[in-house]
Image (cartoon, rainbow, N blue to C red; front, side, top):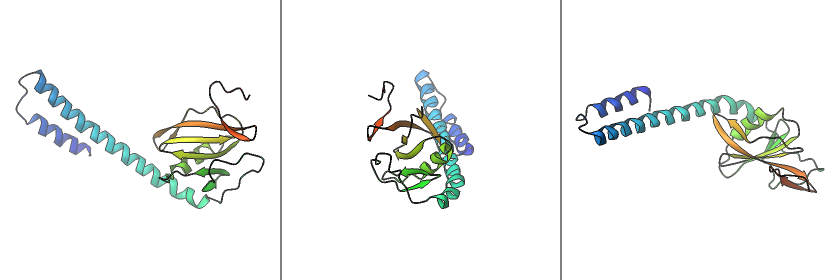
Length: 163
């Protein structure tokens, strides 16, 4: 819904019988806010689509077969490929925005692999990265970190001591 659609919805709302009481006025306001939220949501989706169209196609030719460092524990799933030397694991949605996340994080020392699942990111790195979230194509993805510990990938939590 564009700005013109919002104005049309607003005209339709105010063309109704004038509010006779606070309940009618509250109903008008609710209709307007619903129309406004629809416009805002559509604009965000369009912005995300444009970001994807610009950022992802140039990254796809840079994807290579994954190569895992044998000194590190095996990842929970085989990566689908790697970009800038960082492996990536798709979930069933195969959200290729994970390539944008790798591109944004490519200068992060020790990053081994990323896995995306429903808007959350799991990182596998040689050392803790200290990430709580990552902005990817105007969406905020929560981050869960894993590092190698005693031959396995161990989640890094606030109380992680390495024991």
